[in-house]
Length: 388
Image (cartoon, rainbow, N blue to C red; front, side, top):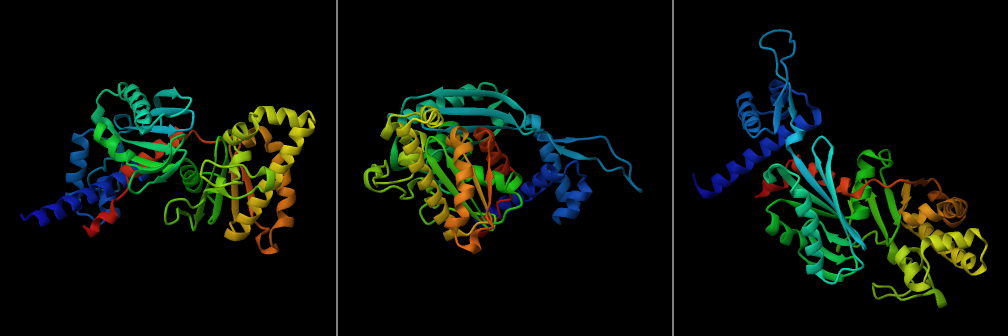
């Protein structure tokens, strides 16, 4: 068999196995006959694939069930206890990791705190420390099917390149490549807000939405845009970077880490508030509730900036839903959200007033979202590879 024919044969074999695994995962318990019907593969091909998966202990057989005639079909399920994934959250002040099996059971967790990342190599060192602690909990590392990463920064998720890392800044760091060289498993990366938006669109609070925006007011500020349930990343993966919306002028136009001035993140994020005003979000919230004039004035300027910025984005993109979340809203949401609901109808055109605002009070665990990214990739049929 020629090299090209061998390559095509191996690709087809891989695609067929992914089809079978996906159906067992999504619709199991399912029989071999049902797999053949749903995939269009011959029963012999399905049997060969299932036998390989049984040998690898990735699939389990149940007790034969009653049928209308002939042999009793044997139900198949994914052996989730033999498949593991690691989820990593890379934030400005910490790295957290979770090890889970494919039954969605948490096996272990690890974390490392940091005042700041000194370099890309420092980040890799901390990541390795977390990864190594989690891998040690697995009976056989070959059972780890990948690691997902939720990163508070800009990410080219297709190439696995970090374009801006928290505390390190701009660059083009091949993080996926370096980690895969170290561990020999697949790594999948995504911006934290993009990952949150994808999860909420698939089976969360945005399940009924078609066109939506997700905004996260946190240590930094991020955003994600979904149109027709598809993530909009832009030509250079910066679409949705709501934190760099130019929201402040005059004396409030502080310099941002992006190089510009007046970005929303300079006063409305936790990091910007501390850097430019010397205040934690708790200190600001307590001062506003105590009626301290300087803090009340600052809050009012922040609230006006947020309402104007959100109104302009809603007008420009015309979403049906707007999801807001983050630690800033955990502390100030009872004040800020009513303001947003009150002002938005006055600030946007009548045609955009149907937007529904959802406050996600309790953010999903980002390490678990990152595990979900691995599970999705493991069972995803690599259709794009058909062009090879």
